[in-house]
Image 1: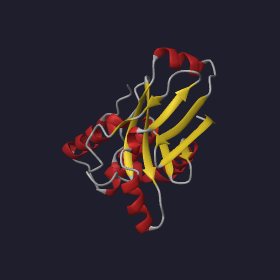
Image 2 (image 1 turned 90 degrees about the vertical axis):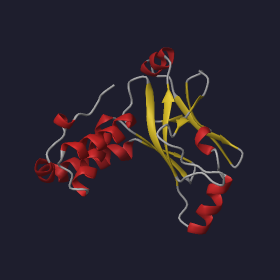
Image 3 (image 1 turned 180 degrees about the horizontal axis):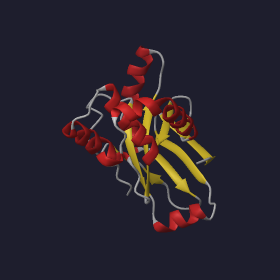
Image 4 (image 1 turned 30 degrees about the horizontal axis):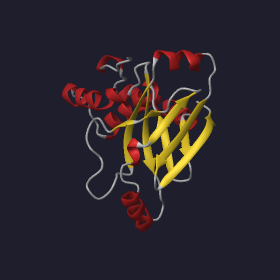
Amino acid sequence: MATITAESLLSLEEYAVRRPELRRAAIEKKNRRKVFLGDNIMLQFEDEETIRYQIQEMLRVEKTFEQEGIREELEAYNPLVPDGHNWKATMMIEFTDVEERQKKLVELKGIERKIYMQVGEFERVYAIADEDMPRENAEKTSAVHFMRFELSAAMIAALKAGDPIAAGVDHPAYRLHIDEINP
């Protein structure tokens, strides 16, 4: 697993100078790594670069330069970096109308465990969601979830050989299957 270290981060001053180019590159990359599951669910697949950008942005916004603060950000964000045997994604449930969103979050309770990826003809791989902390309560789900999709060695080999990736949602209130997504 690629671990981001304090030594590998730019100082606040260096980041301020390079931020325009890094921000542009990060936005372009993030846009290429989005998967829309219908109109209301988006998966943002992460990698070391996208997480590094998020860490640098948090340090900039919070004006964090002390080692303890940097360590805390690294502890929070490093688990979001895939390790070569999985995919990691942030899932966002998006409804623009506040009242509709509140209603849908109740209806979609548990959806974070019903998101799947499927490599070729292999079994579906359902997301392992919110390992850091529960994001749903007794009444509703959250609009944001952090997900991990574990891949077997055979799935990884099939991906390298060009097998397609399907994706979907298997929740009673939101069913969807996409035959092939572009990674």
